[in-house]
Image (cartoon, rainbow, N blue to C red; front, side, top):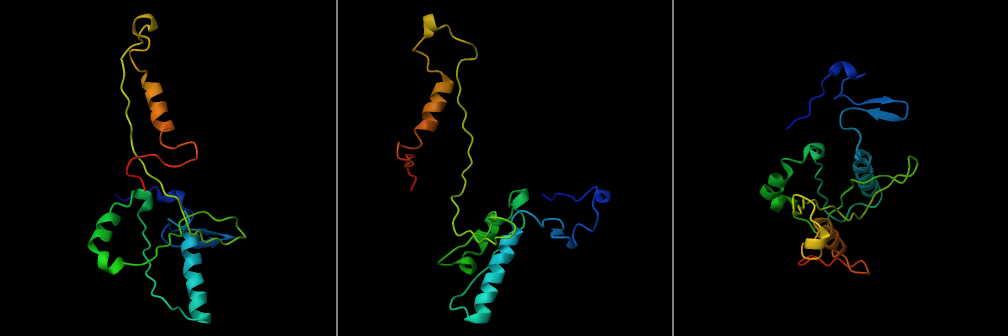
Amino acid sequence: MFNPVDPMELWTSDPFEAVVRGDYLFARGSSDMKGQVMASLKAVEAIVRTTGLPINIKWLVEGEEEIGSEHLGEFIKNNKKLLASDFCLNPDAGMMGPTKPTITTGLRGLAYFELKVYGPDKDLHSGLFGGTIHNPAQALIELIAGMHDKNGKIMLPGFL
C-alpha cells in the first residue's frame, strides 16, 4: 500500500525533495521522530571520530511505519542472521524540547487487540433477571481491572 502525495498542487515544494524553511525541514516523511534517527547516527559518528567504536553497529531504518510496516515482518524473518545482535535501540520517540536533543533508550511498547463482549439484545428487567444475567459492561470492567494487581503487576497468564 502506498499513500499518494496527491493533490500535488497543495505542496509548496517537491514532496520528495527536502527543503529547509526557517528552522524546519519540509518533505514527505520528514516528521514523526526522524530527528532521533539522525541524532543516533550523529552520536555514533561522534564516538567514531573521537574514541573509535569498539562494537559492530547495524542500522535498520524502516520507512513504512505510517502504512502499517507491511514488509517489515517478512524482511526480519528472511534476514535473521544479518540482523542478529546483542542489543537494540529504537530511536523512535519524542524529544524533550526543540533545544534539547534526545535519544530515548527505553520504550514500554504497545499491544493492540480487539475484545468483544456480548450480552442480551434488549434490557432485562431486574425483577426477573437481576443477578442471574451478568451485565456485559460489568464483565468488561472486571476483565480490564483484573489485568493488574493493586501494585501494578501485570496479571495476564503467560505475560513475562
